[in-house]
Length: 330
Image (cartoon, one colour):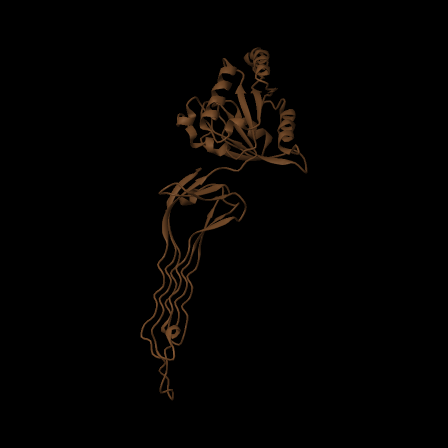
């Protein structure tokens, strides 16, 4: 199951209290204060772990607390610090406050981390407060309280290329052909219910990650169909590969509707470099539509790559075109 949005509650550890104690030793008639300091409370740290690919670990666990610091003891013994709590999330996770949706961090790099709740400081024992005029202080300082907050974790996939298009346009078949990804493939709309990632290797020096985004329909930016839940996953992509099912009627109209959804969603999706792919050219009706579609796309200043993902026709030329956009020096 692909989970890309969760709400959690986190709390750091409280600082340990300082101790009030006095030396009671044989042959030391005037023992002074010996209360030790409290230990530091544990902090809550969120760290990007590339071994994780979804937020499914948070499906049933929503509360996270770090350990409290131990109280100080006599004999100037300092309490043990509370252990930090490290929460592992996939790279690409955006951390926001629940109250005002303020972005605290966008963890895109491996092992990137943020402390979202600092542990409380340990209090001072009474030994700290001894002075020449106050030789037997009978008080200590308590540890500072823990920090707590409600957070939102939102995953946005990190991929070089995003496959977009109507449901059943052949995106899952294409990603299975060009990469190591093996998504569910069936001949009906909305086969893909969650994004899929695949690694495409051109040669020893060039490879890229492609994301298969569940099919979009008109009104997706308003939540229709699978909606804008998945549009966010192409925000980080460098290139969009727009698949058109050429066996369907009026492919140009379907192309325009998806482009309108990208523009309505915003976040710069409509401005990303785009490669238009006319898929399913192995079908007779697609061959009839291809020349008209290419003519219409020339008017939109778009080159069309005709492929059959099922029969693996035109795939090599398409991959080199994608690679050219990704790896062209700027």
